[in-house]
Image (cartoon, rainbow, N blue to C red; front, side, top):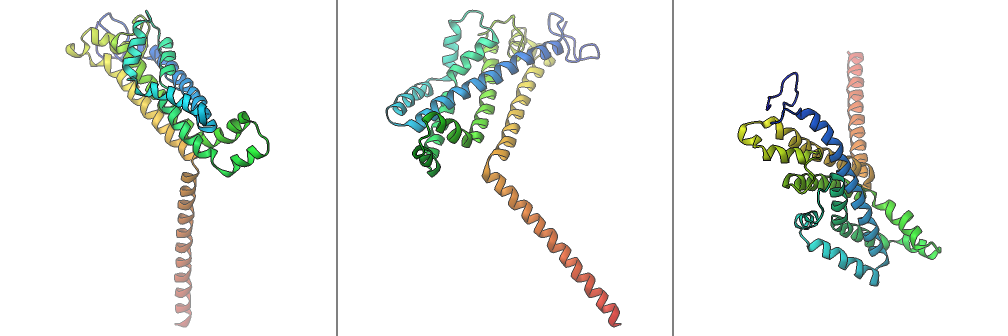
Length: 267
């Protein structure tokens, strides 16, 4: 029990002699499923509500915006704790569903603003005059032009879902018999791992959450560079400037070489 990392146990053992590395690997599956699933589901809800409100406007926008404001003013963690208190022995997947159904409001507000901006452009007016339906305009004209915003929302929603699920599990609002990074932190706290100096019990799940958040941020930067026209333009300008510098250097070398040849001929 409580053996430090060794060749037999890479991440050490718990107070019950359980292998921490096995728990870490098994808990990664639940954490990733909850994080990615909740992030994608909350983004889908945000896109549906935000784009519909921003494009249609009027009464529809007022009603959807009021619902969005209600979810925005509610404290997220407190709302999750209240809902979890009524759900007995909640699993990580149930937590992910609850997180997705309560965490879409910020994304919907951003989607609404982008949809309102895009809806005022000329090609949207041309699509309306051509007789395109509302569904077709939203699906084929507005949403494709919001790819970078949607991708960014997915990444940050996944990160927020992972943090929320881990926080709820750490506070005990989850079936502690399940295995995830959050429940690993819960059991390490309950058994006094920090007091006893068993750092190998709580560092791996905490470090895993931190590295997962970093990976989501890096993927967001990469997707933004691919889908954002402004970043593509700036990158092309840098490539052109680099090529111009190389041409100038080659021309300068050529002039110096010609000058040296003429001098030697004159002598």
